[in-house]
Amino acid sequence: MQSVTLQVKGMSCGHCVKSVEGAVKNLGGTAEVDLASGQVAVRYDDSQVKLEAIKEAIEDQGYDVV
Image 1 (spheres, rainbow, N blue to C red):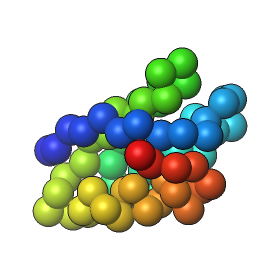
Image 2 (image 1 turned 30 degrees about the horizontal axis):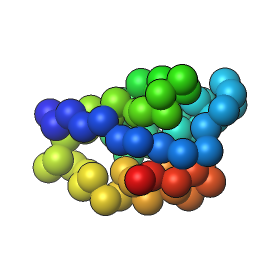
Image 3 (image 1 turned 90 degrees about the vertical axis):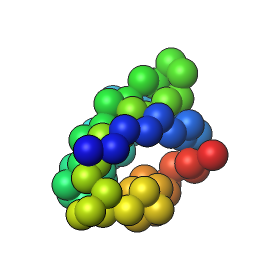
Image 4 (image 1 turned 180 degrees about the vertical axis):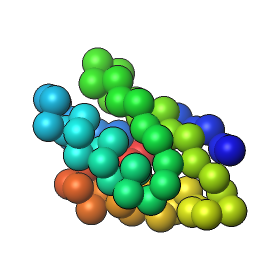
């Protein structure tokens, strides 16, 4: 399992948290969102999904991964 913390802009509420967590979960990973810092701690199996795909999934929800 790989762990990475992403800086994500545009999150502001509980719906944002659910959207980001759901997007990562759909790819087989887990995400813990900290709204105050704008950070998302992601855990994933890099033999199953690549980090770029996770970033794209988050961006597809309308947020910016920086």
